[in-house]
Amino acid sequence: MPKVQARTVLWYLVFLGFAVNYMIRINLNITIVEMVMSKTKNLQQRFIELNNDDGGGGGGLVRDQNRFISLNKQFSVDFNTSISNASLIELESHNLNSTNSLPSKWSGNAVELNNLTVKYVNQTFYKKIETFSIEKYLLRLFDIEYNKLGFEWNEYQQGLVLGAFFWAHWVTQIPGGILAKKFGTKIVFGLSNATGCWMCFFIPIISYWDYRALIWWRVIQGLICGLSWPAMHVLTAQWIPPNERSKFVTAYLGSSVGIAIFYPLFGYIISWTSWEWVYHICGMVGTFWWLGWLILVYDTPALHPRIDENELSYIQKSLGSSVQTSKENYTPWKEIVSSRPVWMNVIAQWGGIWGLFTLMTQAPTYFKVIHNWDIKTTGILSGLPHLMRMIFAYIFSIFGDYLLRTEKMSRTNVRKLATTFCCIVKGCVVLALAFYGHNSIAAIIFLTIATMFHGAVSSGPLASIVDISPNYAGIVLGISGMIGVLPGFISPFIVGILTLDNQTNESWRYVFLITAGMLITSGLLYVLFGSSTLQTWNTPLKCKDDKEDYLLSTDTATKHNIYKDQNCIELLNQNNENN
Image (cartoon, rainbow, N blue to C red; front, side):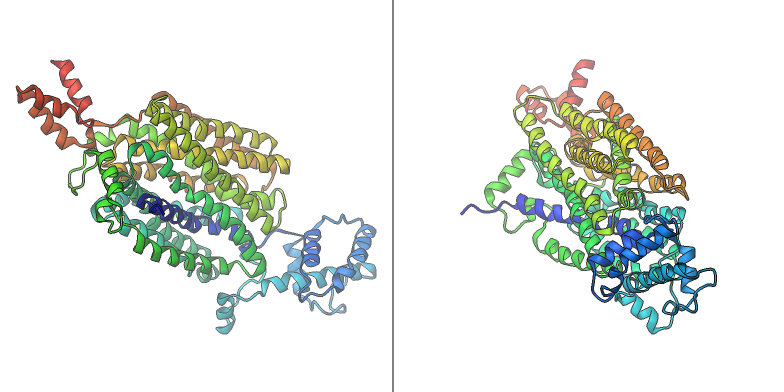
């Protein structure tokens, strides 16, 4: 029986790690749909929910449904007419079980109509509100009042809550790469992920305290989780041969599968229990992953106690001298920040992340508010695009590595081809979403296809960062992430402003038009000016010494050995041209 390669085990642990990482990011995106008190409560949806859930409320109200519809028609009230929160609060101020205590403005059949409505609210809506959670139990135990209808957060406040994770997320991007280079990815990525998960345990009770406290808790959570992505590139550079990077980097898109799985799962959890349990499950899942990560992952192949000797030899030979094994303190900051390939990757990541985060963060609200899907359907529809994203990423990565292995296309052109799909083509699909999203089926199709195309990022900008500098990939990704993550809070802020008291197809069209513009512009710039060739500053000290040896040596064999080092070819060629 063939032995499982250490790289394969590493791929799965990294894959699960990024799934956990995005679980932390997106849990609030779907729970906020149930956390917040809706401005309208659709009666038809409530009757459907009651018909599907006969536990406790009984079938009495269901049998009254025809009478309810008849009375609605009699009073010229359409069955889809919603009862506002104001009406619910007015009803709540009376004895919900007493006809005599109803407002005097209702009489006769109107009273009967209202009684049925009140009965529905009492048996279904409040029944769901009172579903057990640890936080509600503690609040009742200490006699602390809370709004059973949900939190009264407007769209602007919701935008702040959703975007808070990314407010300080950019701050730890560069430190994440530096710390991983010094202490190893195992500790930095592992603790970043695990701590973020453990913080989820406290989100429900903090939400009941004050939305501003929740904002700052999410800020801290985002700050800690910001260490994770750049730290991983350090591990990739140490473990993965150049022609396998496109495929390995698909493990980063465990984030997509995480979204695809956790969105529907969270939707069902909320439907079965309450939104608070979502965060407790996140904390438990993160703890189990952390234990596996500690046992099975090592920072370099040489440190792995169970790696096969042939695999170790293959990795070391493939990487050659492009990766430093010593932890040198010198970092060529000037060369990095003035490098055009670095900034083209930053630009491509900016556009791609703007598109990804906008669709990822806003999808649950968009499907719930604009297309009126229930929470379970919303979870499925919000997660499906990211499953397609992972599948597309895997297929494209195999194709990209084939092009590199057979030398049918240069490394730079493979990365540009991938960026064309993850930015330009995706942007065109988002344009279609902007103009045809009013149709529910079209909205699902276009959002799914747009997110799917973003999977090519693993063979594009993400892989290119390791291509141009394996030794400083963590730091370069930190710079890219520091700037590229800004759309994570800028986009929700803009969406909050555009949709404030204006949840319409027209306002969402502007959201998608802005997103499409970011994607297409960033993609075009990368295709025109990007490069994925190994940069001379990847090993600056070694190249400098080799250059001096090359100039001083009179021995042809010595010059030839120096010239064979791929890291210094460009520098030496420049010297030859000058001489």
